[in-house]
Length: 261
Image (cartoon, rainbow, N blue to C red; front, top):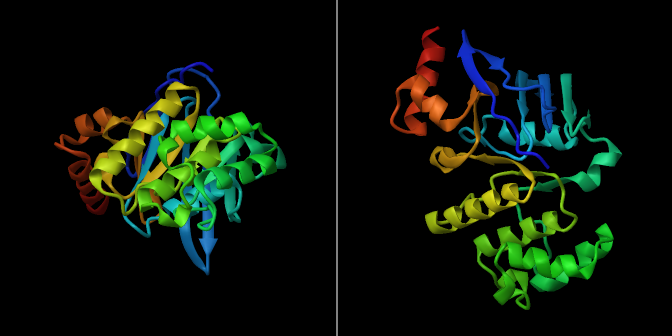
C-alpha cells in the first residue's frame, strides 16, 4: 500500500476548507454528515476525508459527538443526511465487514477465557489461520500473558486484547474509540507506538481521544466540539496557524474565534 498524502485544511468563517495535495482516493470520505438522536442534532453537517496509511486523531471533549461519528463511519449509526464512504463503498456495506476493524471503549473480549483462547475463538469466526493468533499477540506485546485469563489483566492489557482481536484478519482500516481512556501516561505512549507500527505496516487508523496532546505525532488532527468540526489538519499546521504552544491551547483559541465570529 502506498503512503497516504497529506491534506492541508484551514477554517474559514467556521467552515472547513480543504486543499488537496493529490487526487488519491481517501480511505474515509464524509460529506455533509448529519445525525439526529432523540430529537437533538448531534452532528449538523460534517465534511472531511482521511488519506490512506495515516493516523488521524479525532479529538474533543466528552459529549462532542466523537462516538456518534465513529458509529457512522463503521455503518451502525442512522444518518439524517449526507453520506459516508469507506474504502470506496457506502459505510455499513456487508463487503466492508472484514475490511474494517472497530474497537469500542469497552473491551469486547471474554473475561473468563485466556488471551489466547479469546483470539482463537475470534480467529475461527473470521476464518483466519491460527498463525495469526500468535502474530497479533506478539504485535500488541502480550506474549507473556497469552495464557492468562482476561479478567485478571489490567485495563491497558485488556484494551490490547481487544485491539489484537480487531487485527486478526489484517483490516486496512482500524477505527478505535477512546482506546487509551483511563490508562496511565506510560501505557498511552505504549499503545500509540503500536498504532504507528500498524500504519508502517500498511494500515490506516482513525482514533478518538479526549486527550489532545496524544495526537501530537499524528498525521492529521480533527477537532470536534458540540458536533462541529473546528479544524482538520496536521498538528504542526494547527499550532502554526493558531500560534499556540500546544494542542490544548490551539483548541481554546479556535473555540474563542468561533464564539467571537
